[in-house]
Image (cartoon, rainbow, N blue to C red; front, side):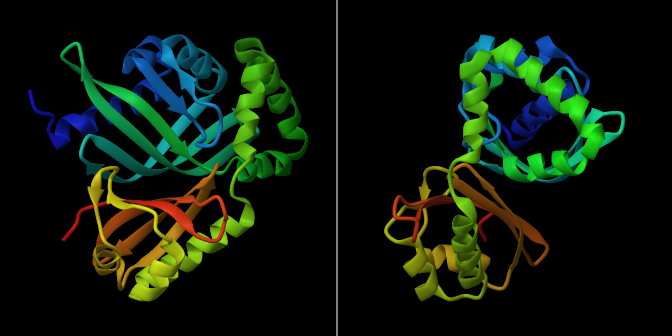
Length: 265
């Protein structure tokens, strides 16, 4: 059976609903046997249901997580959700985390499942919120550290902390300039910053720089997030929203890959 947009959105929503309800088996069971969780993007992925269970036991099960939805975008078999997470780390410490969550979906055993969940959010910014919590953050931080080590060991804990690596502030600045050029309709500026990397709608449908500028020109951008070696931002134009995700090239002076999620007009 073909997957409809409603089917894809419903599967993505079941993931959020199961997490909010602390339905461990329901949440893990949504993934394919070889499913992957990369949360945040840039950290070491959790592959397979056993590892995904360890992720759940570390980050989802012990705390209350509320999702404040924005816009859901569907391209092919991918759902990209623009939302904010509200995470209660302790009775006196609640953090709000701007996030983009990408769900790559596929059919397994005649059921629609999550093949990959990729969450774009800023680990350094979250740690900064934690630090500003003062004394209220100390017990929560110690508890998270103990739980992470118990469930994932030293290797897994270091894998999570690898989310600090990647772009640095220069990468966000580069992407901000790119967004300014694209929303300003400057195709020459877009070409200069995009280098020779592919530009696609989703992962596969090729776009030209002209296509991209035509789609974004006149828009306004915000919610700029860096996560590992990726940067993401929302663009609003004429009452419609898109999300642009880019990777930074090895030379850190141009973007090596650009993916647009949104409705082409």
